[in-house]
Length: 401
Image (cartoon, rainbow, N blue to C red; front, side, top):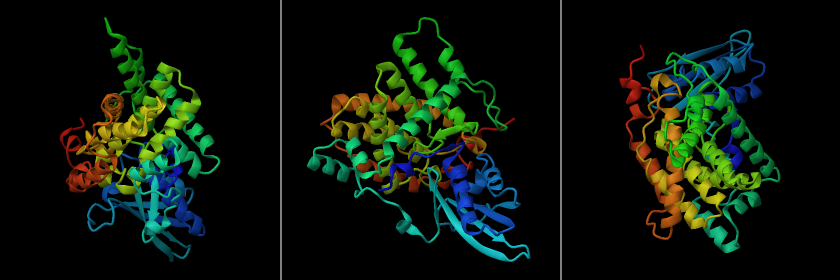
């Protein structure tokens, strides 16, 4: 399994696979073709269909600037190794091609050059499944968080601390921001209103849920506006885990150390899904993004309360099981409708999953590994129109006036 550094990436939204990934691919190509005077990039599959809404062409052009770059949207090519594919080619002053390379944006901002395969992965954990991790904990008498700090490098604690601080800052910015999000949808920011508006006769429980949703809206709106966020596991699902951690730490006064340990546990859930399935909406639907984020958040809640490992696994399993089949249909390709509200609903679901697991652990029949495999198989069976192409669902039926 890969390092948590490959899961939690600090960067600008609105999309990890459509913005961060192509940016990384362009930078990587530049490293070996710095002598090129101009570039041509061809976007295929989901990168082509929703690239405009995700600002894919803009991030590519700005990465190669001041050298010119032509971006071509190819909507016809179908025989692709992955839904998120781009070709990059550089040219000399005489117009000679300096080489064409194909990159795949596999989700969560991670990119791979075609032909590298699994050998290009920088695995640091000697595990493949979550059961492997649990067996290790049982044999060595350690916690899930201990696993992270044993196998990652010495700087992982400070890295996770910066991840948490970035999450906090995004929420605080989003809670005071007003106005309209970028793009032709003209979606109003709602986090501030949601946080500050107190309904008449509001019960304490309703107030807490309102605040939890406001925190998710805050990060998601920051992401949609191109602000700095953390992929958890993606930009489109970046509001769930921060909202849950911010809400729980505010309510219960958990120390920063406890929160960072919860981030570590959530990270193990995320890398398990990346290892055995996908966190790409273009590959497996929104269940791969929001579903994984909900699992990570549910596991984090259990970790905050030092729950047994089996309870933590059950919380993560419940969270993902009940997101199976969730489609990815962003209107106009923007990470706004239905993405922002979906992050808030997922945060509530993570809380409910952890609460159920606390009472019912010891009775489960379905393992987390089984639900991850099921999610991936389900994603492969979902019609391509519902996997981040803006050709089905809300994206097809909602008409922009």
